Length: 213
Length: 213
Image (cartoon, each protein chain N blue to C red):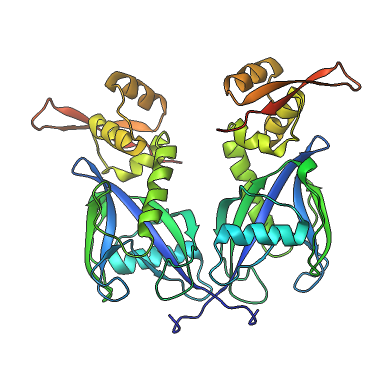
């Protein structure tokens, strides 16, 4: 196959969590050109013969310290001009993670900073990462009804108010509290714990996701 | 980016139609190694800086004469060993097409034959194309309820029996005729035509998909 010109191939990871009552996307600040100083999704070059999901897990861990073992492929991006260095194709992955599980300690000298950015208030981004994030947010809207999937963005214990807020932000519309709770319980993925949360409001029961067999 | 080894990058197309009351997948028989004589999905190398969907459309047309302008990305495959020639990544696309619109006349000397094969009785396939087809059939099951999408596999005019049969094959389970028809009409994508089909059974009204605005 040597007669064919070959593209550079990278992976990028859209990692989303629910933090401080908001959707947040994990971004790294690039230390080197191109787009030095700009924020970007974690990612990098696929090693020869490396399975694509493995490459995504590795890059995410190297750049942010985040370990995720359930990365799903989102979409592959290959439009001309998406990388100023030349022909480059990127396979994007999506992961919903609990922020409380995330120790953000990268070990990559190409990264200046790591941060969970509010999904609806993003800084200027490198490459075509705006398109990748748009695609991921669209996937989130389409799949918001899959609570067992969406709930992975919550901490291990959460209130029903938090679940509803996450659902509304992901789906892009507000829902009635009573209808939502009835529907959410009917999904069969919620388990009430013994714990309560005490704060400014009435004490609230804490729930968790049933572990999938 | 020259310091990085680069994979060969191809596109493959899973084109599906409803023909002779069965799901059928478009396959080509390879004229050259690797896997000469074996059947495979249409596809080939992406040209430098070519948008991926364009590459898929081009390869499909060159190899089979089929013109499709609504190719959707399915999944990207990059497991080690999937191509005996070396490190190779393939972006797979899915298209549902009316067989009556398909003039199968390829213009590619690497192709010995072109055929719509029954999806549930496939010949031995080249590369990892079994996995690609498994993935596509899974997508079909997940999205069978989207009749406006699924119906693209039907001829321009079809009977409700044909629609039901396609739905059952795609979704992997039989459904009750009356319930199915009530549900199908409620989807709002069917339009009754003036035409009837006369055959061995009672004359049947012909329907078509409403054109999407």
